[in-house]
Length: 264
Ligand SMILES: C[S@@+](CC[C@H](N)C(=O)[O-])C[C@H]1O[C@@H](n2cnc3c(N)ncnc32)[C@H](O)[C@@H]1O
Image 1: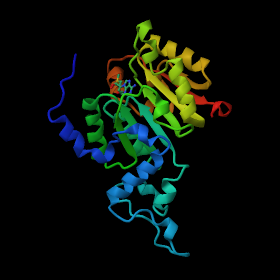
Image 2 (image 1 turned 30 degrees about the horizontal axis):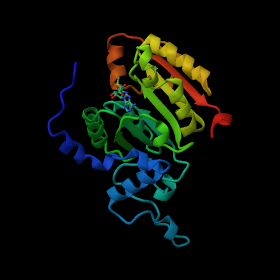
Image 3 (image 1 turned 180 degrees about the vertical axis):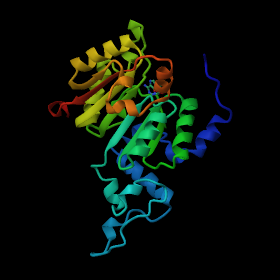
Image 4 (image 1 turned 120 degrees about the vertical axis):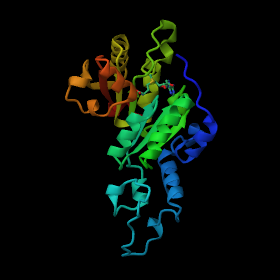
């Protein structure tokens, strides 16, 4: 069934523009810096002070009013947004339940949710705003080539949750686990970075397993019934996953890592 466009969509999206990234391709290689800029803008204070701190200065702990890294008091904002802060992407984030939960649970990392449909991403924005999170950003963007958005080795992990299976052979290249896509992910992930994939579709799972296994990833976890497993991935649900579990459908899962020698 076709979804109706919410009223005043553009105005409603504008309310959350501090969480939205309009031109994600211009952020290639700069995502951590963008999080820092957005964070500082929300705090409404002078940017990060670490560089100008006098020796022995003790007043370095920022007061994270917005909620980000509340458990990291004592760590200055510069350090938080340095290169070693982990950065994760959910491609096809839908209404944002998964990425918002991840960002809430791990305030010391940064999360990007990309979703091609703007009426859907509005829901994700409302959730993130409600949770007062500053370590998550969203982009309403239909990703055709992830290499245009991320630099080599920029990401620590990629989540593909209940991606469209595109069952017809002629649509194979649209599947987010198509070999050509996996080659893009290999490049934008750090050595040891991961790809996690969930689906309720057995054929799509079998296809994806073959593609991932044939690519330069090493499969480290697999489940054909994630909901009954003890794997950590079962504990953060997406909107689709919650519904499928209610309908007693099996959830298929793959976690794979990119081996260091294949990273560029
Ligand atoms: C079936 S929904 C799943 C949503 C969510 N991950 C969940 O599990 O609840 C798949 C979503 O991925 C989005 N999507 C598919 N391909 C995409 C792409 N290349 N770039 C951005 N979004 C995409 C679709 O618009 C759709 O909202």
